[in-house]
Image 1 (cartoon, rainbow, N blue to C red):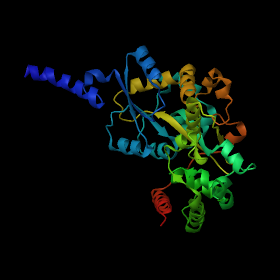
Image 2 (cartoon, rainbow, N blue to C red; image 1 turned 30 degrees about the horizontal axis):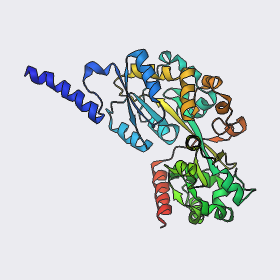
Image 3 (spheres, rainbow, N blue to C red; image 1 turned 30 degrees about the vertical axis):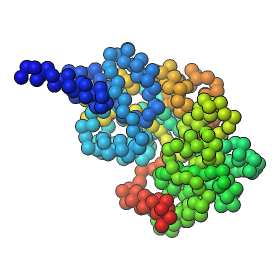
Image 4 (cartoon, rainbow, N blue to C red; image 1 turned 180 degrees about the vertical axis):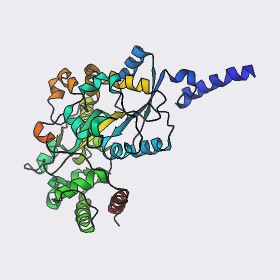
Length: 370
């Protein structure tokens, strides 16, 4: 029996090593931090620095869909200590359900470095900023191959959704490739505002108008996808996309690394500037909330936040980090929009369960051509 007791922890450790499973034995848990995040948000060097300073080992699990995160957390006992949650719709509907632990502000003094404009927007889903600290944020806009678009239409309205949704204009770019995000939450509100509607509505006449516009645009679309499109822009397979500002920065980085002469531009549509905010939150049943607070305080150091933005190209939610960034990043309007654009930020609203079903069904019918 004694040999068996000694062998079981060893076998568990070996299993963790080869499967990536999270350690479960309690004596190690106080020195382990489990993070659930988008792939690029916490580079290896940052995790290693935190571990070197604190002795807390970081396990980093990556997700590719926030709905998966919500499902995982809803079951309970996920064993995660830090999770990245987007402000809308997920954080907005998760806070009332008790998914997250209220932050102990005394343990995260560096959270005071958070961008006040972003914090104000975040209050729409986190009243009083009690649960979330903004990490990275960005916008949804128009990405395009500058030279191809100019060659096809020198006076193209690159700051308008006319590029995709005005049939006679979009038809000019169909051959070089147009794509939109496979996300009703992103696209349907943009189309509704393009049509002059105050907000996306499930009211039949209003929604019918939105879907009619999308069906009109569909023959000119090559893809409806939320992943990989930025890579296709970077290698010249597409010339126009409705996509995320962070993905535009990834495309530019890929172009630079390949030493291509292609130029991908990013513009804000005058009709709509959707903003997304990815925040640091602590699950209500986190086994190591102390380490989670320590990690939030660590990454909200200006130097750490600046280093991450410098590496991945996403806009930092840390206002104090901006002065540490090179002008090429800090003054890049695609990353950090000017005040007049910020004034037009629109955070997606939280929809009812019935609205979600209505919009999801409409989106699926649009994609399938029914």
